[in-house]
Image (cartoon, protein in one colour):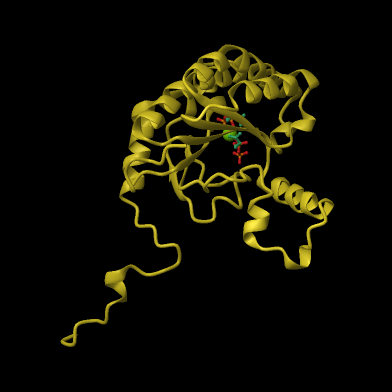
Length: 246
Ligand code: IPE
Ligand code: IPE
Ligand code: MG
């Protein structure tokens, strides 16, 4: 996987794609129309990331809590996920993108699980970029599933360390997201990549996901480049003793 070409670029971006419902409401359209409009945002944003030199993207498409939405909205979303795989995967494959689904896929219909698996199998050898799609994903469930998996494999949980746990998450082997973008203005993480986001920079924009575009992701990248990431340390100049005259 190519590294980002400049150090001020994130290696991995996570996006909480929020605001489809508000986008639809402002147009007096059903919420499903907002979700459909949101799908159209994915390709241009992914292309802009690739062009900028960011090759790992994780998109939050459906949370473990989103099942509590009205049944018809959940059904519309599941239908849309299947249709989107059908319409997008061949082109993504041609562009060298590796597609992975993260989350508990066992709750998806057999048909959707088969589509997801086929998309993963088709694109598994691609190395230009990785697209993780978080479907029935929750950060808490991910951690619980990882611990259960380790226990089932006979791991000594009393000796569990960070690297072992990280290696049992859906994102095993990928760098943590350096940047998490949330559209539509809510100031929360909504159970997204709880473990992996430990030191992610957070960028929140009022723009609704269907209105987000290549220009908007460039804005997020520019903001990221201005951030001072300290990881709990102090900057070198701040660590120097104060001048004697002060
Ligand atoms: C995000 O848009 C998409 C999903 C959660 C599936 P929303 O549907 O949450 O849109 P708002 O927040 O109601 O505007
Ligand atoms: C987060 O958005 C989940 C996804 C984008 C898939 P929500 O709209 O579900 O989050 P809350 O309910 O506002 O926290
Ligand atoms: Mg929302």
